[in-house]
Length: 78
Image 1 (cartoon, rainbow, N blue to C red):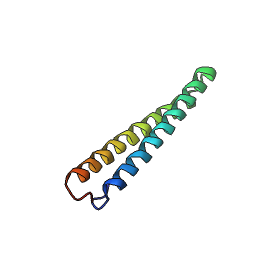
Image 2: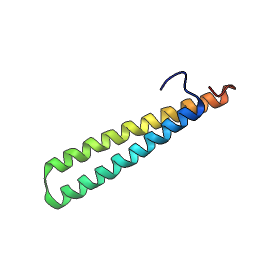
Image 3: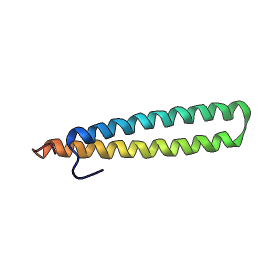
Image 4: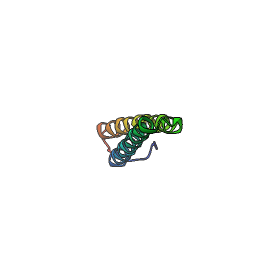
């Protein structure tokens, strides 16, 4: 997050982070399915990595959204 981003910039970054979170969760599901079918521990490890990335993107999205809300309510929108 940058202090000089506008409300729209923060909201756009929040949306991007949510999209990345969704992609990470889909990859996690794919690796979990592969692990269930093959029993290969490598797939389980990749699923755990993707889950961690998804959680990171979720936190980033929430932070950007909250910053955008603060920018919108402080009166100047910047």
